[in-house]
Length: 271
Length: 105
Image (cartoon, rainbow over all chains, first blue to last red; front, side, top):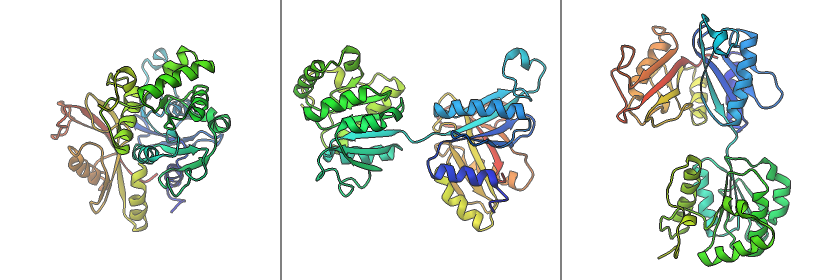
């Protein structure tokens, strides 16, 4: 069967393994249905859209779409032309690029009950979840079976090892509310391009933490990146409700919607 | 598409022919983003969805006619009021464009 459907077989295997892949399909114009499969490694694209230059240009654009985790329709000339002057009097080929980006990452610091609930909700939303705590008895796969990875580590080493991989779609949630863990975790997160940094704690904990962070040299722009206290102002009480308020805040920050975050209000979090 | 792979694999082992419909574009309100997919077999089994349930019935009809060879693979639009539109629409008032083809690649 693999010889009959070579593109689909490869596409299905890559998607099943969460390996980034983009599938370009001609949906309108010459060669409707023709396919080009593009990956982020250096492998040559599989398939063709009917012209080598069109393949080259679409593969380039598909990689950019994949990087941005975007799927959509793009228009080209029969030989990959994209500029308006090159497209005058040319038939248009419309290509749908379907991106399968790697899943977004969520790193959760602190192996507490809130962590288990947050990891569960994050899995529902498609995150690859890593739980980190320096305490070996708490950071166990048995306590966090829903996590993709459980690491017994201090924050600094894991950020040094893997922080470079974090980007705008990823999230770091620091639930320890213990200064000796919070401060290096925040410093580590601020050194990355991660899109969301949330830090748990009461207003009092938050104020003390801000002071400690300033003492170690975190400036206003760094503090401004922190969602602290973490979460939307939903009145959440249980670990599960709190997890929803955190994940909802991550969505709202991404979409730029003005829903009330705890960071931007005052007074007790639980009243 | 990932959530469809199990069903597709099973159907293909059973020797079923399959059509796939994918959302390629949306205008205005639309429940599913580009990339959302649904698969339909020759015998009428369905996996996945492309809207909130508004157009799936019509998509099955279109998919079956592609498998029967009476329609070419093409973009179909739901929620539009021109001649090419289907009679069914989206209750949300949006427009979705689907590309429907046989899974023969």
